[in-house]
Image (cartoon, rainbow over all chains, first blue to last red; front, side, top):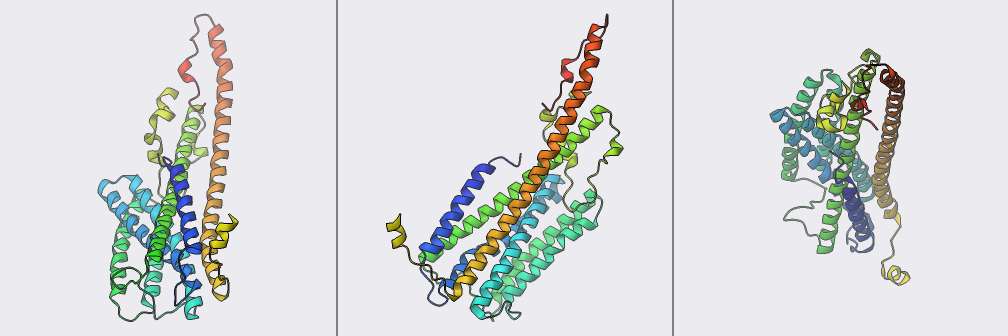
Length: 264
Length: 88
């Protein structure tokens, strides 16, 4: 289900990332002001953009979950936010490294772009504890979706507010004020595509593994029921977890492969 | 290949080089850690699946003698082929 097209996606991710790296280090001209240090731009900015888009995507999936009540949307929302947090960590670390090289400081508290990204990151860092704090799976997914929608709406608002601010050190890349030469623009776009592909591939891996685990759990329960083993030996619930509960849907997703009726 | 490499600009790995290397290493380290976690999960899944298959095989082996006994009994029920394992 989720593993479909994973191989092609993985190969294209590796190919595009390799091309992007080749362009960054061997083709694109050095920037006049920052020189070699500006190469961080091709990893830091795509990471930040993909991370923020992932948060928004998590919100969109959450809207779908609230509309349809289908567990798969909560699952997708969870994975998108989870992956965006990992990309967010990478954004903060690469940004700090760039700041140290460029401004001489690891962090600049007066800089709205940095602080706003940190606020968004910290906001989403509460997502997993929120899920973990709610034991009932139905309530957990509903509350998590409401959180994802609210926080997802905050991301573009935050972005607009930062763009509207006048005092900044942070360079503006996208927009009318951008003066990137075409080689830099092309390399940036390819890096961005590579990063988006990496995000999608990792999300798909995560979805596939989690779904497979849920199916395996359901299959084990079925085998135990067939063998007459008391189910109390292995509790039907998977215990408290921040991850969405999938065990109820796992068997109905692929009934022909498990064929529960034949065991009766 | 050497001609191509000669055409390429040399990487200026001076003061800025360590920061650039650091940023790219962070990205690849994160991806590597993630892939390693996925590999661990994958091996756990494989182990669980192996356990399940083994248990299923044992259940089949237990059912086999009972099925044979039923077949040899006069008027005994025939072994139901639909009771075959769904896992193998």
